[in-house]
Amino acid sequence: MWKAQNGGLGAHSCDRYAPNPVQMRASWPIPLADSSLDRIFLRDKAQNRCKMAAVLCRLWTTGPRFPCPHGLERDTCWYAVSMSAVQPSLPHWKPVSRPSPIRLQGRTVALEPLDAVQHTRDLWHAVRGHDELWAWLFDGPYATQEALREAVAQKQASADSVFFAIVPAATGRTAGWASYMRMEPEHGVIEVGNILLGPALQRTTAATEAIYLMARHVFEDLGYRRYEWKCNALNEPSRRAALRLGFTFEGIFRQHMVVKGSNRDTAWYSMLDHEWPARK
Image (tube, rainbow, N blue to C red; front, side, top):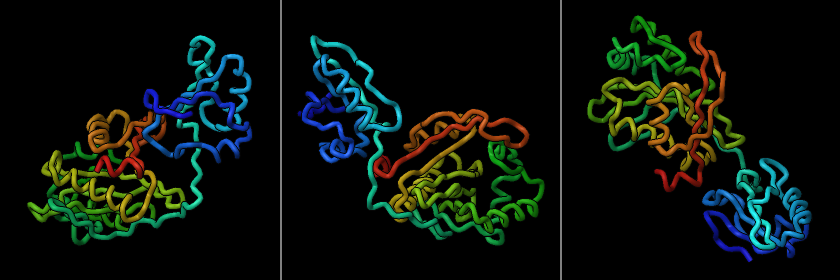
């Protein structure tokens, strides 16, 4: 009989489950994609240890494998199975659409498809004299407005990313940009990145709402499953922002890139579709 236990589920004896993995999955009493569960705990008589091992290894064919005795209590042997080892079936999944360059309107900010003619002048005034803004980006800084315009035109024409100009309602002038990138609609995965915020936009409600609007569009309008945030592991402001915005830290990819002639270790963060309702 299954019951809630220490953030996971406990099981009394696996005897009623056949060791066939198909039958095991068919009789599973909980949704495998339940993200509120970190681990599932099972216990059985110690003398059934070998049979338990066979059952577990047939059910979970990838990821961290158990059994690993969690401890002995009288004649009972405990096992802990990480939910990350469970691969839920997605029989109704269909690839989603790539985002289009559309306007996203919020209360304090609007996101407009980035346009070299329309936005370069305001962007130049927002970032001129602040070369430190480009320290963690792949491009920049730019010495002239014309050089910036050419860079904006390239971003506007990119087939790999969708860039948005960030226009705070308080001023009506473009103060930064952000983009969707590394889009994998067949898997429902997309990244927000290449974020440039002018000094006047940083640490404002408008900046936060801009990222919120992009996340809402991804999850609620387009139906993506996973929304990623990545940054240089040394970029502490970006890492703090990721956590503040509700992303979960997943680890460091060491020696991941060479950017502007320097090594980059990349910190990975993500937000999942079933987490969005609570985090928005």
